[in-house]
Image (cartoon, rainbow, N blue to C red; front, side):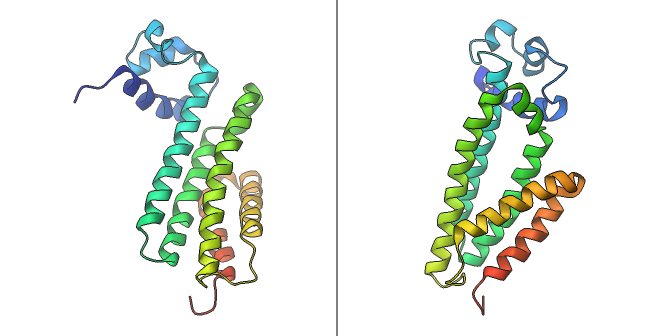
Length: 186
């Protein structure tokens, strides 16, 4: 199958940003990496900021889609929860490798749009937890929003205190938190 110009750009963007961050390269460098001319590149992205934003938003949307499909196919709540516990930390670790703080400092407008997209993912997870509560899989007195806030606090804590082990720490912490909210017998 022939690869379109849009596909070339999209496929090259994420690995390029992971490898190079956002500093020390220009659009000429990226165009060369993607195998397109700079003029062609600018037909698809308006600027370096636009490229970074589109790449990050595509990553979040793709992760959200994968997570939604896997939850839909999960035979039971526990399997769905284990899916969240596997996918969400990987997504967070990926964001850390993008050096998000540096992106937000250089391109503050991107942060708002990413937060809006992340809020959509958080809402999906909240809905999943509330459904588990209705089914009796999560303690009736647990609050899905509080569970999510605890998870978000853990992300911030480990991102600052132990970034080298972020994924592992998040997986352990998420499992511990979630098992504490699970209904007895689950």
